[in-house]
Image 1 (tube, rainbow, N blue to C red):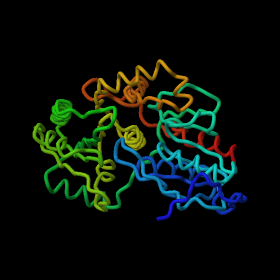
Image 2: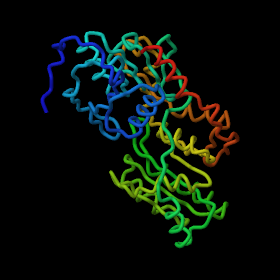
Image 3: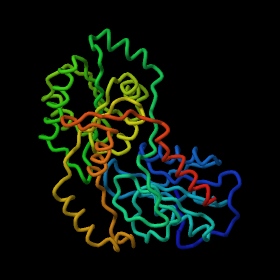
Length: 347
């Protein structure tokens, strides 16, 4: 696919009346779903364009700008590492297109972005163009054959109450060491035995074969374990979440925590330890906040701080330590609408 030379701006055009908003996406489902949810909440026509291919965790992005051509949108919504394509689009449009960045900006001074919406685990200082949210925008997935899944579970002897565990995987911050996985298996097993119910488990795109093997070997209660398969139409995670009497999720994914919270089920988080190396990096970045503002150093991530805040508020419990005390309330869940209203002002 041909790639345009981004140093040569195209002829200036008027913004497109058909699609005033472009979503510049990668291939990470959790990020794309948030961009879609936000665009739908804004309430104007939008066009989705995949401009980057990203690894499941870390690594460099591969960009494709072939779909960036006039008529130009009034606004582009990028997420994480797709920001360079939003900056390229603004240059091509000669400033016609404004930029909303979800997540941490990299490689550019934050004042060059019209609006930054950091995720709640991102460590960024306040500024007029920084809009805070309490939860990521991920909605609750559904499963069309939940009743069928439940019948199969009951026929196989999996009785209620159901504890559904969602296991993530290695990130730059979390190593998912074997001792953490065995500890997770011990704690969830003890909880399921105390409740007298059954355990349903789903893994994710980042869950390694080693993690699954360690968990299976250590677990001492019967469980139905689904191992993630890309593009699997029969992925039962949605059904497992809908059937759950409680949800437990590893603390490596803010998106997954948000989705589980919005399900309305009692939610417990199993925190994963931040690696010593990343704790050191985070400390060093905190000493040079001006470099973060200029985009010369990426902002840090501190998901443990956010989980602790949710625990103190009673929104989640921590596996083995506390129980959730406050039920989900849709009236308090106003992040999406507040952000959409802020963006409408840019249009």
